[in-house]
Image (cartoon, rainbow, N blue to C red; front, side):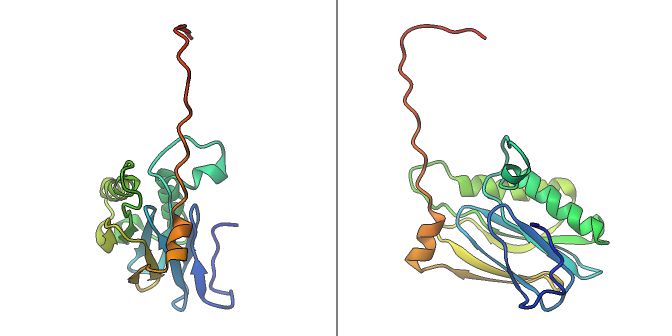
Length: 185
């Protein structure tokens, strides 16, 4: 299961990968992730000490089922907010920190900037204040987040192997032959 209460789990470090989100009320839990152009939203209820993190790949898109939908920000944000609400959180007490959104590929569209803009707009529309974080830039980053206190820490990733794992080569655009025919639907 993607969402879990990790308070009874040995080893209090939870790594959140693309398409996942986790929520915890355990003060010893630290959530971690590695981001390139992806964005992680760290969200918590400041009064009751419950928080969580998500990690999404693209702002929005069509999804063929639950698993594929998790990679999109719109779906990832709804899952994270709803999980906090189910566990006693209240929207008016929530605050967010945003990380990621780097420009990882020169010459291509800036997916990182689109992800960052989406996250900022989504939270603004939901009335959830952004109180910190780090968006944009040209470098991958490793983020640690303590969900009950809201403490966050970021380090730039310089290990080339770690950065290479974030840079999947872009899919080639298929070439379509133009035979001059017109097809109407």
